[in-house]
Length: 319
Image (tube, rainbow, N blue to C red; front, side, top):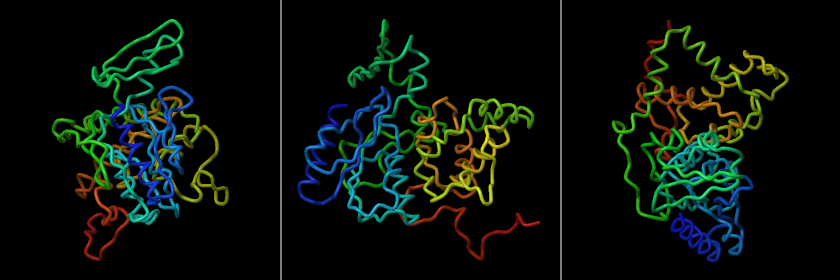
């Protein structure tokens, strides 16, 4: 997406030249295909490393926590919502930021593309006009429609445009309605299962987990100075890959994100074994919407419903 890349570079150079920011956080080409890296440009010369395409799936809000500099940052819809969450939670000040808004057309699912490849993927090409992705490796080359390999969170997204920005790199894209996207279809399928089937489903879902914590480390919400899984005194959860310890980690992490998760998909994208941990966070997102009318990160004023208390709150749940 050359037009987006060129505009990001133009804005970043201007911000640095005019000394309006100390750095601009964007993406540069990764060392492995399908995974572009976060990149901090602190000079005009470094800006030429910036890229934008359908492999910019990591959430850059993860890199602004508690920073003191003046920061320019590239932000899609979900990234901008996580920036808003950071502002609400006091992890960054809004006036420290110059948000370069990117109307998002979705990220490709690297796990889907890897499954289609007939070997290791060596290169990825995106044809913006045709809407195709071409993967190539030793002895193979395959083109697919981008729509077929979008990340699931992108295919059901209803906030593609940044909700918070100082400047856009392009005109806003058309948003899907909730009726068109049906973002909770998968959650409803799981809710309809019997207790035994749910148990079996989640056991199978987590069976490949190696507790590498890539999902946690890629999440902009996981900024605690010490994560509960790393504490040893007291030790809240075992360090092993015992199924009970794995379930405890994923369930507690999901509840930690309740009312704060924007469904950016960074957790799933970073998982080396392809576990769809969004099955946990999406359920809690649905509950927050249905019980509290709440979506995370839509403004910088309101705190999430689960970290506020008012004396007049209903207490029917107390037995």
